[in-house]
Image (cartoon, rainbow, N blue to C red; front, side, top):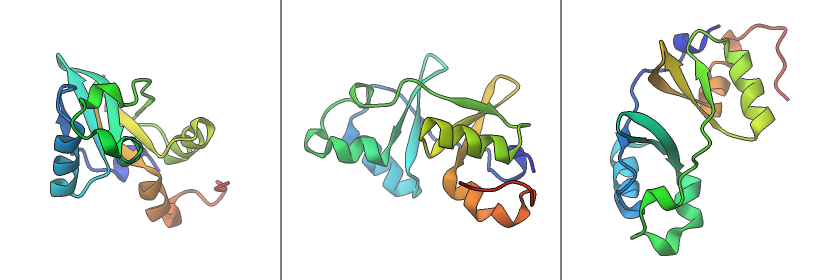
Length: 126
């Protein structure tokens, strides 16, 4: 099964100069756990609930000060199994998905687990 078959293409993006408090409000309003950070139409980071919790006493700081900057991408035509392996190898729970060099979505560990019954029988989660 390919990644593009299980994820939605909706991604909420923000600029790096918003505060952690503003990020919390956006995530809460949209019921999501992360935001993609862009600057001049380029992905420069991702901010997650965990990043915010680690900095809960600094909610007025800019997200650029705590966001993850080393982003790992995967192509929407890649297999879900490859995404799971990449997540496990890098100890992450989210991967940004690109399609034709443009941001397409985010695949999460939850997405993979929710679709595990549809994934090839010869792939084992570890």
